[in-house]
Length: 345
Image (cartoon, rainbow, N blue to C red; front, side):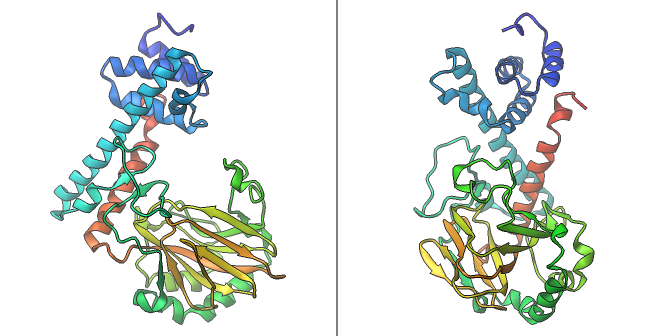
């Protein structure tokens, strides 16, 4: 290891130039933590975790050197401690700023980085990112149970017509499963338009396509969507081509419902949620907790198209919804600041 004998500033400068050097990231993270620079260590480990996850997962590699496995274990535990503390601090900030209590949100679990052992309460529910244990384990809601969706039902014909006007422009769509997505289950869909998306909002930012859908967006102004920094988290048209199959998978969180407004539904299309098969009906929204295992297929000879967006879980209080958005925003702000924390900007 050529890094030994260098000062922390020198190591940080080396790391900036060798961002994919897992061994150096582990060594430097340990040195930063020993010096009491816990946030810098967490930022470094987190950035390293973005590169294939090797920084935290080398601890499970029997072929890795003993010291590397030990440093990887240290990275995993240190990052878990820091991010769990960040969540608790963001809830503290929310309660202090608003005067509202958010105990259920405080007990929320960031699945990949929680610092204690935990179990999901339902065998078919496994949210990938954020889990609130005290929410009911219900998988599907009908439009009749969610009166808040009535503006969308009223606007179905206009939304469908606006989609039809723009549907032939393939420059608007992109693979829903990006080319570099890990996991063998995505092999047949990775980088393909078999399952494509036409985004109006993506990652809480409007896309260049919003100008094509003014009528659709007008209806969404009447809905209470999941928002981050004031913008809808996502709104997109999801298209499955004939023969396409979305394999069983789990969504990101149980704190919200995914809503499908079916626009084009040929025969032999369905979605299975928590082991039960459901069939879309054009113009009738289907809302479900996508942290339950789900899969979908199109066995017809025509495209299936649904409009997808997220709403808050019906059991959450308005203050709890705001607390969740506050926690997501705080975590996102920290993630965006990692290079600055390390002095690389």
